[in-house]
Length: 198
Image (cartoon, rainbow, N blue to C red):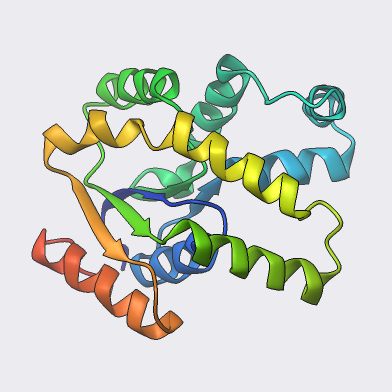
């Protein structure tokens, strides 16, 4: 059985949102829609979209809002996302929030909850530095980490000022064990009447 839930998980890099997102989605029986995963899959398969994205990223730019939104709309129109989804990495800014609102309104839908994983900047930096060492990731230099956190704070964090007044943001303490954080998320969703699939 699938529990209907339209969710967005937000948090700075290193907040653990990828891991928590998978846990939530599996429990609800809904797909994780991660723009990063979609981009990486297309790049790996060498699709036309993948080539477009590669050229943009190679130039050191972010993928434009229109292209990102079109990709997400396409993904959310697939059958497995009909009963719900968990968005990770989108919307990335207030412009993309407008795109998503418009798309969902066209289907008579809206987001049920925005899960904000609240992690101090120092914690994010130390987690990312550890990940870089463990996984041998050359893109996780201290400068790159700081730059990505700056982008999050300037571009993504402001989406919470749009969702906050709607009363759908659940701020979760993102420091603790994986299981502790997962339990906090489920307790918050449960309080909204969003219960996992049985």
